[in-house]
Image 1 (cartoon, rainbow, N blue to C red):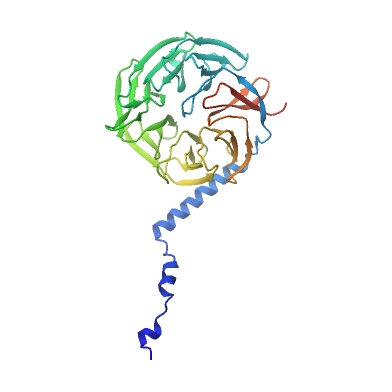
Image 2: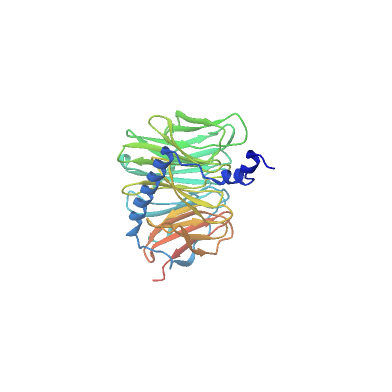
Length: 378
């Protein structure tokens, strides 16, 4: 005969209890409602965007003497100069910096032997106060950074051996209180930790930001007009971090996975929600609420890593992958086209306006010499 305890015993009860979902806390319910509200706002912003570039095709190798060996974004840059010229800047294998006119389709200048080692990164700053364009170039392996006056082709600032313990992987310009600063990243080999460093254009160190054991592979700046604040954006091997430049403090950390590099980060400064879009070594594109730090979308792209990214419009994103470029429909969170033709990882993609092809993109992969042009058939 079974006892009362034995009779009431259900061998599956424990398993059933395990399967039961814990009721969501009030805090989590509010957080989920908040996330859903932001997603609806984001979707509404995308509704009017029908600028679909799906019909873009490979046109030609735009230039054939470009070179890249690192895994950094911004291995070439495009900008509109103070004289309203549309310029492409890239480097050749012999470490020459080349200035190319997109409108005239010709090289307009070059700086021979600009660095002693291969060049890994470029940035541009329009210095309106002094009526000039500044170009920042980095040789990561030699830990060397130079700032050039674009039209004079003169070096106006040089920082050597920026990091004592590793490579100089990325840098950017920041303008604050009528002063121009250079912000440098670090790619460290071993302890002790290195810092993000801020320098004046005269080469003097202004301050350090965030001493840590994490290598920073990407760095950029963003100015929030509404808050009138400058932010420094960093992509590390573990996460993306944003710092408040004026307060010299961590502002937000964006992370839902570990130990994967973040090669490229862009800001989509839309009307209601400012979004941070980042590429990741785990093969996903993540879209975050910049100020709240909430993950809005996580879009799977490939099983291997994703590298350079380029926002075509509010709804469409080009993503550099291994040997291919993929076009992503952000609203529907899906890949809609794959473009072949590259030999290695596509590190940089830029949208340009071409005199013949109008809106188009150019791209460059690692260990290659050709910047490829992709455009509509006109």
